[in-house]
Image (cartoon, rainbow, N blue to C red):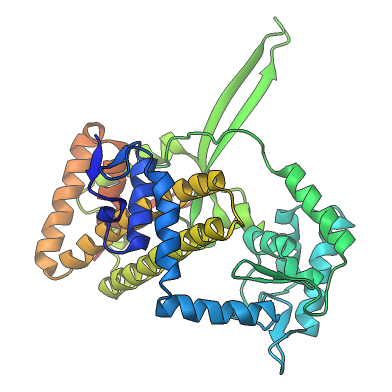
Length: 400
């Protein structure tokens, strides 16, 4: 497949869509040829984007004003954990939160705890996030990576050192970054098979989602001293994985998926398997809103990358890699948007929806092997709200 357009601008309605579609096509391995420019469309994309930005649209002027505020070190948006916006629009320390930030850095740097163990310790000590939530690996890692804690304010590509009172010394912060980089796996990304039940399986003990985990194990046989290895795939409670809460409730992928298939074959199942899902239509609408917001955020990130290349802050080679990553994620969001929109439409006729669910359930139960993993996943998400899994139970909760 080849896409041929009269000009690069013919790829979309507006330059943001042009850039998004170009990188999406590139991520799918589809060449884009511009009649007026030839094969290398990427060479024309940046100059056209620079010209587009030079026109000075209203949004650009707003961003320019915000950038001028950032240069002055004036806080924009939500302040990082540990700080609040002071009277002069500068970040000032929140004493209780600042103490927790220092505690996190000390646990990682001085006590040698990993990110998971730090999250677990904070939760065990009843310390909470700003929104009174539980700590996770992601929230701890983001704090350890945030330069705001050495007094540097960063926004819109602007970095202002000594903008506000630091919570962590530069030396300690650099040591933490070195340790984090050393623990990061190096090498090409692995192409792993998707987990069929991702997003559907929930732990019956804590209610949190279970996540797919892949582990490789190597060993030597004493008899012949030969090296052997095996690949293990299973679902594990997400509370245990990211927050060190709950227990190691694990279920082998092949076994759990077989149990789900068998449960689909029961026409009625247990009475509780038809639990009412109040407000499911509203849930779909909320999901649409969330996905559209995520799509806009991805577009903004792509715009920021293009702006950085135009200003010389980012090399073009990095733009290509980043653009492909964002494009892949945007394609996934668009697929989810289309899928969720279909579900919203199906809510208009409850009887028709139930008949369709029953038909999908029967097709899955009787012809499981006839469908690809992606097709099975879409069908399961269409008829199931969740799958509750315990050591001795597998309960399907159907959408009402």
